Each structure stands twice: as C-alpha cells, then as structure tokens.
Amino acid sequence: MAHQVTSKDIPTNGEHLEKSKVAKLQLITGVIGGIGLIASIIYLFVGGGVEKPETEAHESSVAHGSYAFSWLFAVFFVTTIALGGCFWTFLHNLSNSGWGTSVRRMMENLGLVFPFLIVFCIPFLFPQVQQYLWEWMTAYKQATAAHPGMDASKALMHSSNAHDHLLAAKVFYLSPGFWLLRFFFYFIGLGFFIWLVRKFSVAQDTDKNPGTKNLFAARKHSSWSMIVFAVTLTFLALDLVMALDYSWFSTMFGVYVFAGSALNSMAVLILTGIFLQKAGYLNKVVTEEHYHIMGKLCFAFTVFWAYVSFSQFFLIWYANIVEETRYFLLRNTENWNLVSLSLVFMHFALPFLALLRSDVKKKPTFMIVLCLYILVMHAVDVYHMVIPERGPSVGLVVGHHPQLWISGSWVGDVLALVTAVSGFLFLYLRNLTSVALYPHRDPRILESANLHN
Amino acid sequence: MSTKVRRVYGYLAEFKNASQLYKAAEKIREAGFKKWDCYTPYPVHGLDDAMGVKRSILPYFVFIGGLVGFITAITLAYTTQVGLYPTVVQGKPSNIFTTAAFFPVMFELTILFSGFTVLFGLLALIGLPRWNHPIFASKQFARVTDDKFFIAIEARDAKFSAEGTKALLDEIGGDNIELVEDDSE
Image (tube, rainbow over the protein chains, first blue to last red):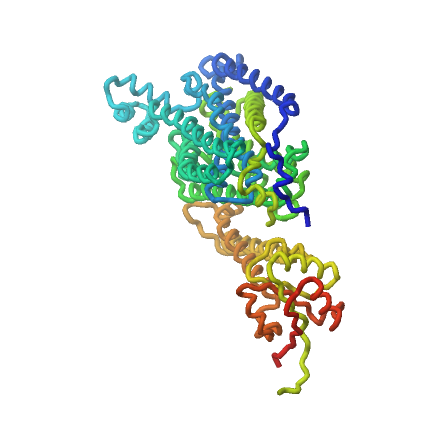
C-alpha cells in the first residue's frame, strides 16, 4: 500500500510549471502558429486557387476556396477539444466530484483555451471566406438583392433555384444577422463562464481564509454554465459544419460532435497529466488511479461516440429521406467510403478493444500512444465531417468530370492543421504556466490524492 | 444439552473500526492465511489490496460471453435474413450491406449474453445460492450489519491451529474472539 498523502506533502504555495521549462516549446508553437495564421489569412483571402490551365474554356479552371475548408476543418478540430475542457470542468464541479480535484486545473486550463480561439474564427466573418463555405449566405444575399423590399423568406420562394425554397423554411435560423449574433454569443457567453468558474478555483489558491466558499461558488455557477455549454457546442456545430449543406439536417449532429469532443479532450488531459509527471510535476497528487478513471471515461466515450454516430447513420439509412441521405451518400462516394469505414473500425473497434482491460489504462507509455492515436482519429472524424463538402462547393470540373477530391488540396489541410494545433498548444501552455498546476488548497485535494477505486 | 460432535468453522474476531480491521487484514495476509474473510457494515475502499485478494477471473468469462452473444447475433440475423429467407424491406439490399440493420441485434445480444455471464458467473464463483452459512451460528455476528467489523479465519486453512490462530487474532487487536462451530446439521 502506497504512502498516505497528507497536507505535509502538498507544497504551501502549490506547484507551478516553470516558465523556463516550456519557454522553448511555447516559442516554437507560438512562432509556427503566428506564421501559419498569417499565411492562412493570405491564402484564405488572396490565393487558395489550384490552377488548371489545360482545362477547356467553359469549365471551371480554378478551384477557389479550397483552403477555406481546410481552415474550417483545423479550427473546428481544436475548438471541439477546448469545448471538451469546458465540459469536464463544469461536470466535475456539478457532480461534486472528489476524485478529480488534482486534475481539475488541467480541465480548467484546457477549457479556457476556447474563448481565445475566436482569433482563429475571425476569418469566418468575412464574405470572401463565407461564400465558399456556407452557400446559404450567398443564396440569401442574392434573393434579397433580387427582390428588394421583400421579406427574405418570400424572396427565396421567388428564386428560380428550387433549392432556395428549402432555405425559405429555415430563414429564421439561417439568416446572416442571427448567425453573427450567435457567433459572438458562443465565444463571449461560454468564454465568460469558463473564465468565471476557473477564477473561483484560482482564487482558492491564494485565499487567506480557505474555506468552501469558492468551491461552492464554482459548483453553483457550473449549473447554468453547463446549459450554455450544451447550447454553444450544439449550435456551433450546426452553424459551422452542418450548415455547409443547408438542405441537410440531423437532430443527432450536436450530440455526435459532443461525443467526439468529450472523448478527445479527455485524451488531451491524460497526455497532459503524463507529460507533466514526466517533467516532475503532480507526482504527489496524481496516481495511476486517476489515469484509471480517466481511461475509463475515454472508454465510455469511445462507446458513446460509436453509439451516437451509428444512431445518426442508422436512422437516416432506414428512413431514406432525400434531404437526409445526401450527407452519407456523399461520404460513401468514391474514396470517401474508405474514410467512413475506417471510422467504424479505427475510431471505435480498435480503441474499444485496446481500452477493455483495466491494467492498460494505468500504463503511461501505452496511454500516450493510445491517446495520440485517438486524437489522430478525431482529426479524421472532423475531416470526414467537413472536407467531403469541399468538392461540390468548390465546383472544380476537369474534363467534364466534377471533382470530389481536389488534387493538391491536402497541402492546405496539413498547413491549416499544423497552424491550428500549434496555436492551440501555445494557448494551452500559456494557461498552464499562468496558475498553479493543481488546486493545492482545495478542501478535497487530499481526498483526491489518496484516491482508490 | 446436545453431545453431538460439531465441525469447527473457524475463529471470529471483532474489530472496533475500519482502520483497525484494515491493519489486521494486512497482518493476517502477511501471516500467510488463504481461507479467511473480512465482514464490514459498508464497503471499505482498499480492503481488497490489504487482504491480498487476487483479481477475479470473471471479466474473462464476461468477454467470452459477450463474444458468443455477438457471434450468435451475426449468425442468426445473417442466415435468416440473407441466407434462408431474404425479405426486401424498404428497398434495402439483402446481402452483406444489410449488416447495418443487424447492428441493434448484435448490440443487444452482446449485452444480454454479457449480462447473463456476469450474473451466473458471479453466483457460481461466490457459491451462491446456499441455504445457510456456518458463521451465522455466532450471535455477535448479527452486529456486522450495524456497527461492527469482523474477521473470520476458517479452520480449513492449512495454517490454522486452535491456539496459534487465536493468539494471532488477539495480538492484532481482535476483541470477543469466538470459536464458531457449524450448527447447521
């Protein structure tokens, strides 16, 4: 039996991640993120075309807007992970948990990345980027411009394009003004709540009279924060990804994104914990029991992700309604079929079997490999959500054949992903170094340190 | 008064609280006893480790149970719907691509078979159901459901001796040490 952790083992001022230890990493990620961001903005607004000079005159010869999809894919990938951090923070406070007090600060730091990600999302506010991603915006503008003074819904009904009639029914939700309002609500609303809940936790570290006041305040404010989180995640997924094809709808989409988000933020938390311990931190308060619990949560959300994604597919497949099937038809055409199938076996079956045994969840080396693998598969999952829409939207035609896959566009995907992940890491490291690594004066820190399950 | 010869079940000792029981359990484990058990009014975390209880083999049974359920479901759905009597429902194909429709069945049968294996495997491993347990012969043992903690060392254990075991229980802080005799005959 391991030594019982007592208050003598916990440093009075807490453990702080030394800035010098991560300065190099922060510099590298910051520089890559910064250069990538500038390159991306140039690419988004100026370039982004894949030249095809040999095509015939009437065919679309330049694939504009290819990079807009790459950027959406990369930004949405890191956003889901940050959102997951918000979720685990609120859940931990709300459920009055004792086990995770020593890892709670990592959740808070991960969640606090979210409000800063608005920087990456700003390009989405510009029509030059919007016109490629969200066709409903173009349709809306054209219809209202063609019929001045007419109600947007009626204007769309007057449109010669039959697809615009589908948009007329959704015009309350899919209108540029409301879209913009929601966009700012997500980042400012949820950003405020995660900041607030984290503030209570941080205030406890330096509270002269540490009681339960901050803990209870965090619990209280986590309640409506959780509602704001649920609304934000669901509608952010709808506005950014589901709206790529405005004719399509799925009531499972929000929860589908949530399942992936919770799973992958937990993978990031496990990785952070292991790397911090390897660097010599958290050793007093985080034990293999914590990794066991976090591994179990990973396992649970692997199953939940499969359950939800299959439910979405299954209902659409069985009902066979034209407006709904388009999503899966597109994703099973040509080589996208391989990506769809790989999600079944590699996003679900393999991690499911790998995480079944309880002892492997306690092995750091195994978990590093598995968590990185889960994150890679999550990137494939988001890729599968966003990128198949690129071909039809960009409308590249080569030799009379509309192109589903734009050759060479993967370079943009990689650039966008590297940029977004670097920026994400930079922000996460910044949060980690700004405060103590675990809430050392929390009333339940000893309970958590001596965890046994 | 009966003169019947009774089988000795073992020694029962009472402990005041969970912490004492915990330390006593570690000592009995170190003394090398195998057939003994702790009895507590509520679950004590970490007691398994203190007692040196090995991991149960039940998970392996359950994995096999689940696998059997999964294979049963595939076989059942596929042979009936694709092999023996293909029915066209909603224009869906009746070949390997129908598999999506079988997923609910696969899922349900995997869970059902695993559930059954958990229940019956557990009952088999712990030896339930049974009519009675010799330890109920002890009057003071009734308080285990209220506020007392007990350790019983069975006479079947190779290390058991009438004097030595009693001395050991006494030494590690057991109160009201009692020789429990099986009165079930």
